[in-house]
Image 1 (cartoon, rainbow, N blue to C red):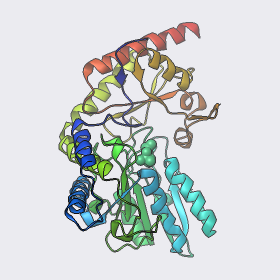
Image 2 (image 1 turned 90 degrees about the horizontal axis):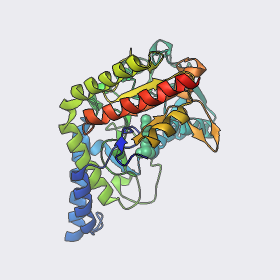
Image 3 (image 1 turned 180 degrees about the vertical axis):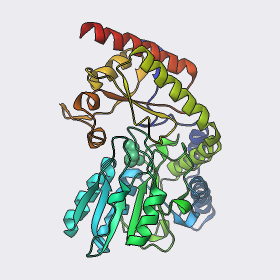
Amino acid sequence: MSQTRTYLDYNATAPLRPEAREAMVRALDTFGNPSSVHAEGRRARAIVEEAREAVAVLVNAKPSEVVFTSGATEANAWAISGALSGQWAAILVSAAEHDSVRGPASHYAALKGIRVNELAVSVDGIADLGQLDAPKDGSLLLALQLANNETGVIQDVARAAALGAEHRFSLHTDAVQAAGRMVVDFRSLGATTLSLSAHKLGGPKGVGALVIRDGYELPALIPGGGQERRRRAGTENVAAIAGFGSAAKAALAELDQMSRVAAMRDGLEAEVVRLTPEAVCIGSDAPRLPNTSCIALPGQAAETLVIKLDLAGIAVSAGAACSSGKVGQSHVLTAMGLAPDIARSAIRVSIGTATTEQDLAAFVAAWNAIGNAGRLAA
Ligand code: PMP
């Protein structure tokens, strides 16, 4: 097994930024409870509020609109739990949503006795906004992600919000993969709620935020305390929040490097297709995040490719999910209508500003060996 590792799985989690680590260590030593009125408490409160400001700036929201959560899974569930207050006649989710959106949509819709409908995506992974129509019997919650975790394909959330304004929609957008990789502007997107996760942008795991448009009433998912202006009970995870704020600042400062990242990704895809002409770069005709590449090698199982690459020292993910020993097919790639041999063989390569040409050369060399050995064996 190779000694040096090449990490190309930023969409699963990005490496912790050194400045986020430092902010966290400093915050750990600021032991006060941010709800306490004394000086120790006020110092901890100042850390939380500085981070809130940084997260708000990252997505052009007001600090008062940012509520810290335990991550984007909680933020997505919370946004969709709004169904319980009875304002929507149905929930509409794009077919490419993350499970942390799909799961709560089914759960809360079943509790409330309302429908969940799916908004189809095209072969490029783009949601068909032409299908948007408000139900006759009331308003609707639309969940439309800003960018997909498997393909990087970007949805036209602003257009959906504009259509929604005509049809009485509320719009929740999962911006987890987009934040720090493209401009995310909560104001101009027009979404009602937007979810974020720190660990996708170089912060720690287990902290995220739900951004809630001012004036929108969303009952707390976790009641039982006055924290976060009664919107999310529980003593704040001050160190994690500090790391999130610091990572948000750093990610924003690096946004101007994204065209360089996109050029690296495009170069990688060109090499892959040159070496293995049967390879398919999924979603490459659609607007995409600059850092994500979803590559299929028909005839190979994605899980096998991931294991072989891992043995060669390279960390990537399979598009297809494998749980409890059962190899499943990615619902995202299936919804795009891709042939099963393409969907089953898709891996995801996702990079960041710290990725180097050497990292990509290591991937290409391993891919060439694996892809062409596979061809000889087939
Ligand atoms: N949404 C998307 C698009 C994601 O990629 C992820 C992380 N895999 C989540 C939500 C969940 O985020 P967290 O890990 O913070 O719960």
